[in-house]
Length: 266
Image 1 (cartoon, one colour):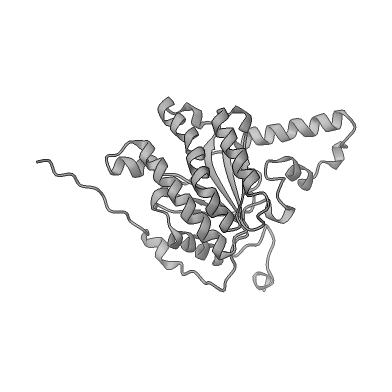
Image 2: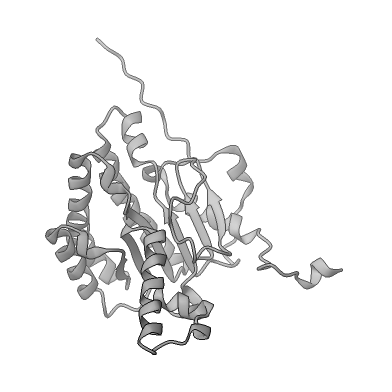
């Protein structure tokens, strides 16, 4: 008989335990998450990588509900990048089916939670069945006015910025926009988060799971002044406590936006 050891999930790393969530403290209005570690979670359990992606979708459900109840206004999740097409065909096909299964089962709960679904990215390059599932979810939750669950699907920030530049250049060419009229706000309106109110476009907190500490072509313009939080927890293990710990870290930050606060000037 062969005995197999399955590593137990480690909920917190030592440095994370010092952050205590204050229910009365500030909660970021917009949280963006790079959901990383699905494959490693599966491999740690001698399972195929797709099992990790499936479990990761269950985590999306839990975190969406928890974020909504904490008062978060926008939750942007990096679901599939423009570079992820390089992965094995079987894995890509599974990832393209995931939104279909996810939305078909979760939309009724999203409606009950008053959550509105939005998707940003180059949707036209997704398989038809994926596009259809996305459109249905958006239509069915369009009347909800609670948390915006914003999936970055076939999204890449460099491509997004290039597209925005091309759109603005075309507007300048057609005398619809003056060169001197290109401001921060105008650029923001042309980016894929431009559908959000101005005050919600840029995430206040960006979380990446799995221990990796890089941005991976995600919201490069929008996160100029975001607080970054990295956790060793793999995405399928990430739960409400992890989210509250990330927010607790945010609550301890001194956000100066390049300036000084009164107490810093003394």
